[in-house]
Length: 350
Image (tube, rainbow, N blue to C red):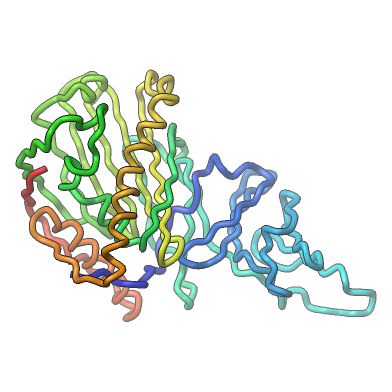
């Protein structure tokens, strides 16, 4: 099995930035799917996104100034509003009538949901969003995350996605004194999966054993559900009825060789908020273990080998490639997406 090389899916919402990192009156330069993007928040709190290139002489607009309303290019002072419309060209003199509406910067649809900023990356035909942004369950749309960690992976997006959804790598990759310090003890797993509108989910199930970590949640036996949504969003929630912890991990392609992983956490336990100074380095260490493994993988991928994906442990990876292929075909053929995933039970040891 080989990856869909160099295929960045379009007409989808991608995770752009944790909302807390974009202050009012500030702008940030990002590269998303190989495109230069300016993300900014107005003085009144609204977020907008523009192509980070001035149409006059191609200088990045983020090299200029932002007054909280309009962006000014640092080269000749051309100004653009939040819709990308040119509002001023300082070099013009009286009598030099020029229709400024001829000059625009590409605008991207953006939304801020649950503290996260999402951007819609359309195909060249500039379709409008017709799908929902993945939401973390149990938390309202205005609820923000309590913790977020951002890590860059030195790989193409497919390898980051497949690595993070892999159910069998845990005992071998995530070993530490605070997680798995012993030997490679493996247990048989059997989980039910079902299709979602643009992905699939490990059906909600009750854990048979309540580990030390889950006991801290209080209440009864924990229930767990894990969902995957195109293009590259994994949402996991654990609830005992008394308390809930949710994690949203979004994988955003930067270029063909670099990917950004944002892992956000939501919880209802007050003590976890107090423990953030301890929790944050543990979360980063956990994600860094995946990052280090993916970096090692790049050495083998240089030789363009055929990847071997087996059932049932690798079925979710196979589903990811199938979903990606079907979505790309649906867009190209201008037809509805048909989810190829069927309800079934997967078994593996981990």
